[in-house]
Length: 140
Image (cartoon, rainbow, N blue to C red; front, side, top):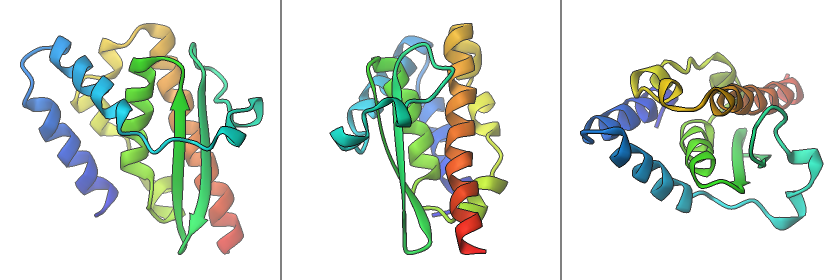
């Protein structure tokens, strides 16, 4: 599935809910399905800078695709990183680098996060794209 297809699915899923209480609950549920990071990567080296809560992300390259795992100590943040990983994991580095993240505005996520969480969201996207850039460099 392409990044755009996954984003479209997420937009449709969020449209099913009437209010943000339901959407937050959905994000929390998504966080529970997150492919958990191995404990050895829950160190400062894998911590995303700029997040209010702790978010660890690890990436591997498998069959020329980037596979992400993550965890967070906050349930909403865990849901946010789960959404991002769903979009970007198992994708080619170049596709991750080139992807837009308009879907975040379309589901209204940024406007419903506190300013510090919204900044954290931007930091998460930057970090996922940095991993993709590093792997793309290896492929070149």
